[in-house]
Length: 459
Image 1 (cartoon, helix red, strand yellow):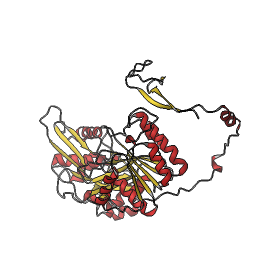
Image 2 (cartoon, helix red, strand yellow):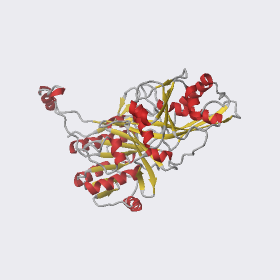
Image 3 (cartoon, one colour):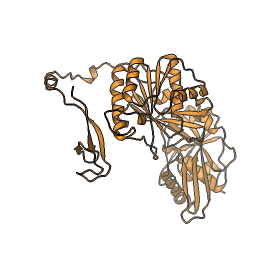
Image 4 (cartoon, one colour):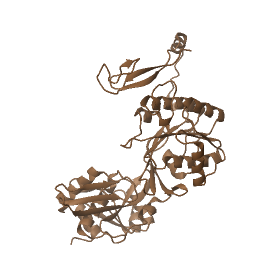
């Protein structure tokens, strides 16, 4: 068989070279040459047979749908994000900041799945087997059916997988394993890409699900080539502040499920603990009579979540006042401040404004706009919002309120948690008569009307 060789390819212009250049001689770009495996040429007789073979083109409506026999992990929040469990042969890339809990969560999942479908192989390329054992003992995890391999050479890892034939493979992390065929260091673009490709070619025919842990850059993206996220079947991020207790597991790509679902976990002494009802957790420390606080209802996938939006306005000592947002888009805060200044008449141009989503959840949907606006107005006027009210709606540049999707489901969740009033846009759609009979619905058409309804009128 022909021996596999390597070549260097410029990621900017595509120039191929047998030698490494710091600067591409074709386009002049620095540090763009990446080492790549050069596949051996196919045999001539193979090409002739493939060209002469009949193509099996079929109509899509005649193809029978295959049922997905997923591996259900006994962690419901993880299954929710994955779309119901692990699909055989799928590759799931898990990213997150250092110390956020990626290894802890996957070790818990490995331990639980090993009890139901042994064996499970945990490849720790960064820690020794003794260190993994210490973590398992600290978390109180069962280790029956769970095997650990401390190895960085990928060929040895795949040989061990071939011998053990596990039901699940975890590689922690993909940036620390390497192939002998490449001369570059582990973690380089070429090593990460080729190692992932080799694992994918190995796992797909064997129907072996794989978790790959990925390091992240200082910007929060998965380290390595962007093509890595295209190669795998699912990409999930574990988010949150390592110094706070809550963690959010969010899917940004999933070929076998929705990318809108999130899983909520709490970091405890026994590892990552599921939060089955995030709304109650996010609201449990809410202050009753504090100005600058409003309750919003966001929708993450099919799950409505109530959260507290806090805002603080203070006289600025700077020529350009601060606008700081935590868990909310800072540019959108700037827009909402402009709406309050222009359409409502609040003099916020000389105010430092801080917006915070309590609990570490990052919110991107516009249904939280009205809660942010009401919280800022509440802080500026020093008037608290009624603690039994929720505020839902999107704010337009003209100061009008726009309706949001699945409003009835949001209100039903608020009612279940004891709220008695909902301030919503004046649109007649989205709420049935039965819901209106069970909860007081206050319909408002503009931001000014919403602030008056939430704060009980102007001072």
